[in-house]
Length: 99
Ligand code: FES
Image (cartoon, rainbow, N blue to C red; front, side):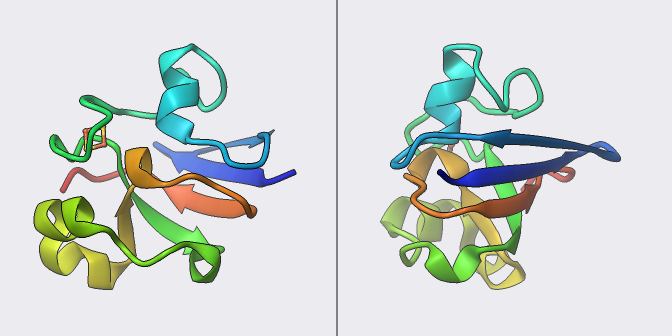
């Protein structure tokens, strides 16, 4: 089971999620990381769900075209659009700045 460590505004929130989980989908139905995860469209357009990956990023697929278009150079700083990620591995991420 993927273990999620979510840093937000100086606090750390942890939870276990099922394999093949999308954190924005979970937050939308008010499950962890709700209410901490900021998100909007769920479709890779608004950028509100952007998080910086701190650990576990090597297990993620490469950024898709929506992430590349929305995040640009921020990808090189470790940012991903969480709504575009279906998780199969544990992940540590932070959402403290907007992109
Ligand atoms: S929620 Fe809008 S880009 Fe992810």
